[in-house]
Image (cartoon, rainbow, N blue to C red; front, side, top):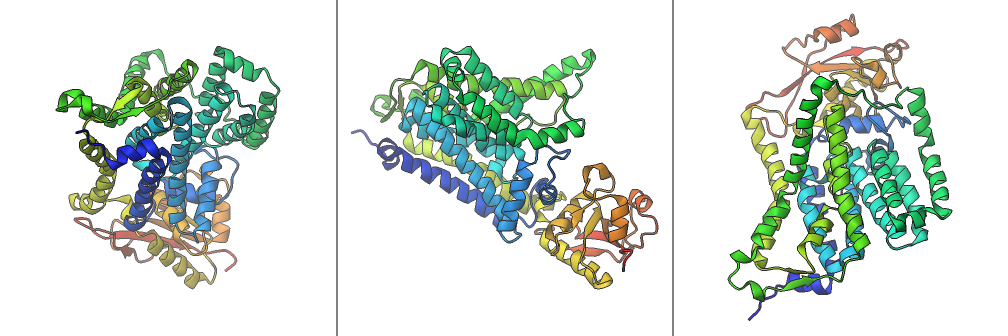
Length: 502
């Protein structure tokens, strides 16, 4: 007798319901986990937030949209970083929705659900967007561009041009890789008869106007900052090393998709006693144009952006690995066939759940175990406690609110984020990176300079003492981490630069 699980029956009968259950459950996991475990933002998110509150049109860390949205979410949550975690998961949900809608248009809703579940297996290796940044924001925007691009070109729906123009403009305000992605979309349109037909109308011209209006302020900043140029090409002697780097990046993307291969192996007929009795997920006939559209954007952007990353020596894949891999789940369904048998349903569920849960388990392990190996976990630093201590200390000593903080960039960012009056960050070692403040203004308005204390006297490091002559160190302040393990308490040395008006 053939056994069909309730989940398979729901995929057949209520695919949209299964989609929302899977996506919202995963988003809830990655909203709750950092909220409970993290005492300070992960990665460089604290710096992103303090840059975002300045509302600069452009900075040296890229287009401004991600920073602005992060600050809005932070303020909306009552100056709590949980708002940014929620924004990250909203990006994840929108990304998955756009891929589900694109998949439904290409392979039908039943297989689109499976495609979304496959997409989740390789997006999850980026710890799905907990560390909000431009790459996290680029995913939903690129997914929406792909969806509405297909509606314009593949389905002939001219009313999708407006949404496409808005999304393209916002993507250009999010990542520099947007230029390459949109050029590839335009190239695909020009190379296909349907695409040329869509471009022959007046709608693309109105879309171009919308994009220019959105991007013009940032474009003007790039021109003024003399940043409107490509990085220099490497010398010929380095081309071999850059080619090796390209291979490594492609292998990294392939490794991120290992979950798809594991699930395919687990579903292979040789492991099933009666493979012919397995329930199957059906799809309607696929339009050849839709097949070409998905396969093109599942492969070409990844190859081009990894090549550019290696060629120009970027540290990370331009646009982010999660962005370039988005259509890969739908592409895998295209190769799977019109009927996809689910031969070992319990094993498949277990393997998929293990892949999704692996990063969560890794996060717990890093937070609770790594300190016992003598390695500091950045998210274990008590940002709120640090910020309140130094903000209150400055106000008690001077009678004025803390307006700026400098010194160690990591500690200064945490104080700027956690202090009650939201002081400005001043990167004194690279003042051009914080154009809203300079050494003269810092000396006039006063502030706190912080560093990691190497002794109980709190002697400042040489470089800080040289940039702030006459700085009198205060008694260092020690803070406990979430888990100290084999690490001593965090000892922060500090000194006050008194305002000239006080």
